[in-house]
Length: 300
Length: 141
Image 1 (cartoon, rainbow over the protein chains, first blue to last red):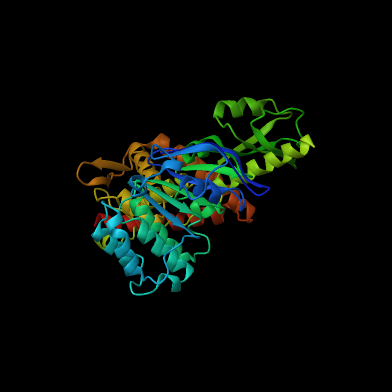
Image 2: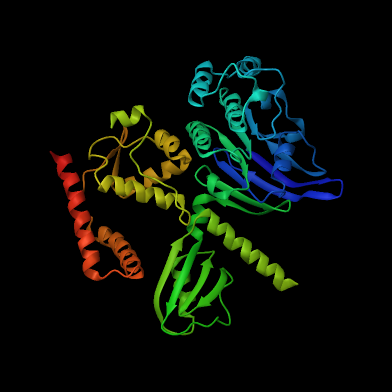
């Protein structure tokens, strides 16, 4: 659905993207996760042909992003916190303005969106609160049943009630489209995502489906029958290895029961118990961030 | 049940807890709701669509959870309806025991951590047992 290859982009002397590649499978909800300034918005603007990359290319709905035509745009919904809306229009005005551009516009769906999101049709878009404006942006992007929906930091700054309304309406249609969503906040996006790509300093650290990630990461505590000391060598897939009292703790990044068992058998001392727990996206991300940082510090 | 559908609110008590994958949390919440009698055997289980909107979880993920529950024989697929809650099986003992071992271990660890003695724990288990049994009786009547 989206394939980006080696995208690079600099603003004056600051490098925003340094060779970013990633792929969004059809039907997925792909969360592009990274800290502020990682290059998420730049990436999305290149995909939407709002910005041009210095080098590299991106394909979106089978077309080079630099050659997106109205035909593709009529199948792409776009919701961004920095979105521009023509001034002097009410919510109703703008809906009326949008309808003719989209052959697939569904009036009943539009009505139900306006109702479920509690949008004030007669208010000027420029006068809406941030939360209301994000809900309006969603109501502008869904009635034509887009094949692809791109959301740039959709949930930042939304209060809990608005966020729930936004997500509920989005998820009702999530099964019929592909979603690319950027966020710096992991937890809020975890339920929405089926795939995740971590980006930092303009590069992709890794991308994977949520179910594969959940299957391959375990937080492991091994309790020994004596005071644990850091083992001389440990499997490379054991991240953030540390010891405390009788316990050896690490994050297994390539979990399988057999591999773990044989790895643990090699530890010095008798094993009293082993606890291997599945991890949330946030703890996986934290573990990877720590291990990347430690590896960088070791190189210095 | 019907009221639930109209209000688009499923009786799955589900609060995202940090530290666990969503899939596992959702499977657990569903099992608790089914075993706890929130859903009667033979009655429809909420659809993927309504669960997704209600729990704020992507429908693909919800779909996987439902497939998992079908595999575990807690739900049954019914053409035209979706899925229905399966009759509580007589023989699923080994699997049940395996499931229980982990839960029991967890309970013992937590109990010891907060300084409870074995009789306290047993009493609490009995209370919960009786409470849930009563819920089941109401359903069967």
